[in-house]
Length: 73
Image (cartoon, rainbow, N blue to C red):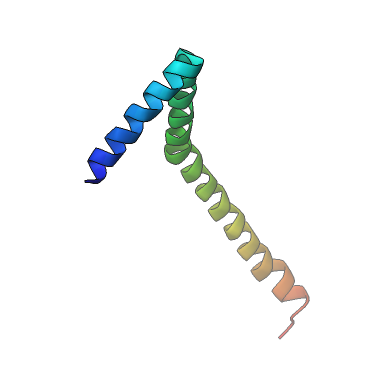
């Protein structure tokens, strides 16, 4: 059922974009889809690694600088 709805939606968009704006509309739609796929597989893991690096550096800073100089036991 979901497949039929998705296929119907894609056919509608294809006819609508092709009729109004020519191949530019379909090309821009494909470009956006490719951009989202690249972001999902390339950028998001990179951002996750960057965040892990920042958190590790902040943890080291807290343990080595702040806790030793401010919160003296």
